[in-house]
View 1 (cartoon, one colour):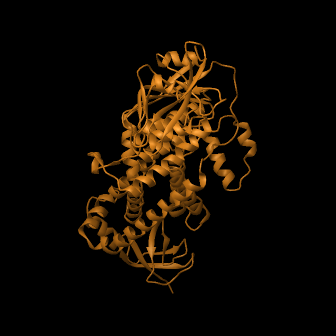
View 2: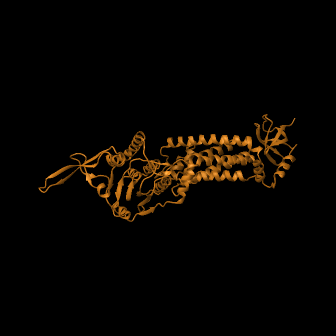
View 3: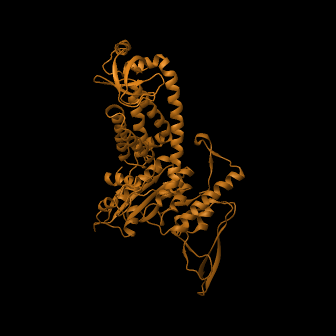
Amino acid sequence: MGYGRDMRIWLGWWACLMGMVCSGLAAEEGPVLSAGPKKVYVVPIRDAIEASMVYLVRRGVKEAMAAEADLLVVDMDTGGGRGDSTEEIMRILEQFPGEAVTYVNHKAFSAGALISMATDQIYMAPQSVIGAAAPILMGPGGTGVQEMPDTVEVKMTSAFSALVRTSAQKHGHDEDVIMAMIDKHHELKRLSWSTNAAGDALVQTNLLCEKGQILTLTDEEARRPYFEEMGQTPRPLLSSGTIESLDALIDTLGFAGAERVNIEPTDMERLGAWLSAISPFLLMVGIIGLYIEFKTPGFGLPGIVGLLAIGLYFLSGYVAGLSGSEWIIVFFVGLALVVVEMFVLPGTLFIGLAGAALMLVAIVMALVDVYPNPGPGLPTIPHAGLQLRMRAVDMLIVIAGTGVGVWVLSRFLPKTSMYRTLVSQSAAGMATERTFEEQQSSRLGMEGVAISTLRPGGKAQFGEQILDVVTQGEMLEAGTRVRIIGSRGSDAVVEPMA
């Protein structure tokens, strides 16, 4: 997606986890700093805030981090959106190590106001507004706003308040202001001073938001100075200033002439939101498809469906901005090692285990949010424990679903006409099911040697052919001479020779 480092860094990162020494590699792969022009990245937040917007912001932040950008500008014009997407965007913005600012380029209602708390400063365009951030409950399909029970409203308000207060404290925003935007029970008062005709200072109390109301501010109101207690220096209520345009803001912040990159939304991000929702199902379909392919001769429809499903699984992580293309490469390297173990060097065990481990790592890491490390060092995983626990739960669901699917298919599929169709379509060089049956019949009585331990399934070699074989229940050691006495699906049934 443009934010990935060198492939060697990724492989070195996982080599470290596997106990291999790669500290020297990590040091060698560090970027070379240069005194080039400053870099500014602009990430737009437009329309409804949902999963596709999360992917856009994640992509922009990671590209900015990989490019070691000096400034990240959130160009905001939104009426709000989903609470879970809002929380995720705030966490993503917190990963950017440089200066981040929000430019309210018309409106920042609801989720937009909350997201702005995750940046260092807030600027507003003329006649822009910010606020009205109280959580609401949408009807099914987003058809309208539903009334929340009091307990639900209190719970949601408390959760979002804690999240936003944390960001506000970190970035120096006034907590009371954002609380008045979220909680209708929160009253906001501030002091201001002026002078009368005689030149005397007059201090007055301003009720900016009374209980039962939700705070919304214009650009003029947001930049007006107030103070909480006597003796304090007045400071703007929320906005650091009203700026005519985004270009003028960049110049005002001292980045005139800087290299500027505008992150543009793509249709792929909307596709990614749909794919991510069904990613566990895609993985199950992929594994089951490959299982059927390995159990039928040749290569056909099950293998195509399996590879397509797994490809879409990795595509969902790539489009979501979670991972780069490196993990699909790692997966297919692992798959190749498993194939080598099964068909080229059966019985070696280590090659197959290494391949399975690579496949598992790739499947897990494809949906883990990894960020480039500015400066020398390996990529980082924020909230690593939480992310890996979530992926572990997903994997347990996939393993359970796949196990049930494989059991059902192995028990019932060979008895159906669909199985004969699959075998007929899959068999390379076999035009019909009859040809396949004739080939199985021609193998009866063939003698060979087991080249892997049969428990009871495994592989045996008959002349130049290596076949999948199964015994009648006994375990035979590698090297045992065997004879074909029948077939079971695509496997040859063998017995030991006296």
